[in-house]
Length: 107
Image 1 (tube, helix red, strand yellow):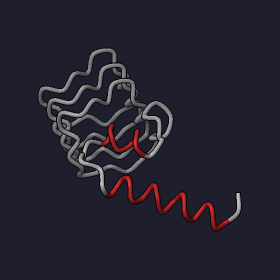
Image 2: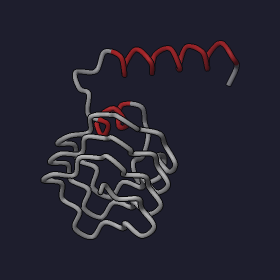
Image 3: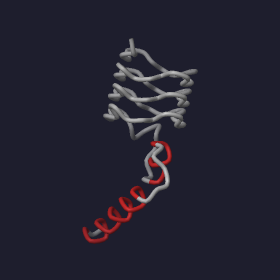
Image 4: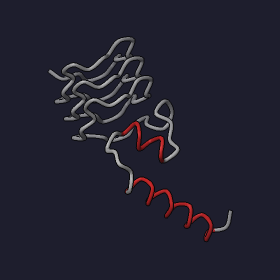
């Protein structure tokens, strides 16, 4: 792909994300063509509001989720191993079958 075509595709993607009628990570990821089960390992989402989002099956291993609002989110089957969840709000979150080994949990 030539650089001009690539630049146009990136501009189009940015416009689609900016004009999306959502702030949900799961929905923005779909718009951007990203896979929650593969593309979010080690990501820094510190301080973000991910409340009431469907993050089931997401691979957030080794991610910085400190101070993240995960109130009411579906994290069932998510991989949170090694993630930093210090100061995160997990109230009402569904953590069934989630992997949390070596994760720093809110205290």
